[in-house]
Image: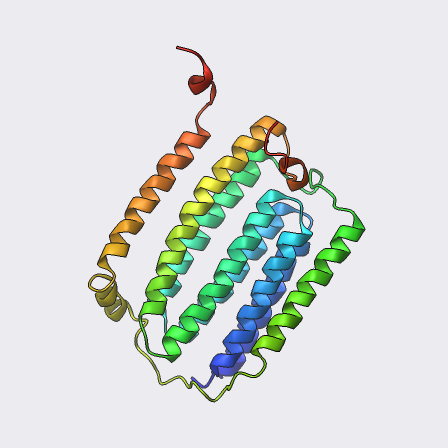
Length: 101
Length: 169
């Protein structure tokens, strides 16, 4: 394996910026959620890369905890979105921003 | 050989991540995001992080994306129901994302690429990582289970019919 750790830095940076772009660009709340997942994964890649290259297990354990938190977040967030769609019949974040119907 | 595999996986990951943002149909976005996750799985395997790789595939592709797909189909969302943003806001979004990228590139450009070289680390194997997780990180590991239980209870509470709680006794 001869991949410098810098390459993972650039890959993770690109994925994170695409995630930010998606959050700003789309109005569908579910797509915005998916772009947040993309940002979380970009950070995970970087954590695993540094953990491997520095030979320290703590980074990979931390990635495991991030995945558990992401799973919990998605379960609750999607439940809230389904409930909002029941009340407002839309997932457009420009309409959901008033938070009360 | 490993380097070519890295380039291929990175290219595919970034391409499908862009398709997540720009595809009109939300179901296609979910499928492209699954491709991105499989590319990241390949990266984890290249980094010898087998435990994280397989947990990633099980949790993300197996659970989270199925949940997304299920909700999309439950809400009956497709390209026709997709809300349209006006072009000015789209332009501003692209410009701000590019600016963030420029800032991050400028901040990270000076890093010394020869500082860290991979030494064939075996830290990511299930045996080594499991030993660390169940000794040094035992308490956070157990608290994670409580977090997942709380999330499950919370999702059920939110998803419940609210008419039961709002009706007077």
